Image (tube, rainbow, N blue to C red; front, side, top):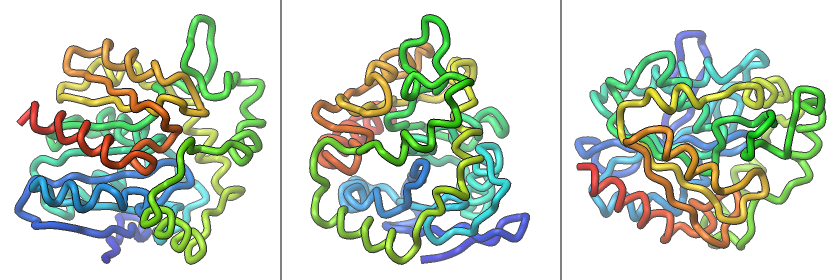
Length: 264
């Protein structure tokens, strides 16, 4: 359990598991999430020979709060932790808004330090436009103010989480509550961005995973993303909502490890 002091004085909380000399997977949660969501990945990925770094994004969990946080700043934080850990190449595994953070990282810093990318249930465009089928709640510029209320009311999972993961998340939520109202600007920034052009330009293999019954958008966004780039692949995990990594960890882990083994 450690905290990295960032260039603006904020602290980024992270935990490490496994042998640091092994390939490193950095796990990045989404909006309102926390590192404990990846509890079900630790043993499987360690056993497969990977070193894991799980973190709490700025404004989340045990990391510092910043009223002016946006996606670009969060991606800068990822750049700083990669630099601090002195990793030449890392694998980025990111859920929901965390995927936008990864795509922003690629936009700002390139992919020279990235070996592979796995994103979980994140559409490349939240706003509904003519002909776009993968928006968040069919949100438009006019209805953006209602996103926060809709988000608060939405049940993100379809199946019960494994007890160990559920307990870890709940304990962390009690100890380090998420400031939902204080993060409206971050959510609005996230919703306003589009990533199709960046996805097309990424020059490392990327796996797009979607929950088959995601409450946020059509799971077919993963198939759409995969066809944007010849290095892309897609997996849709049936009977899962927005958190397939937490809901069905064994199926999720098998899919990710198969992707990593294929691209060694």
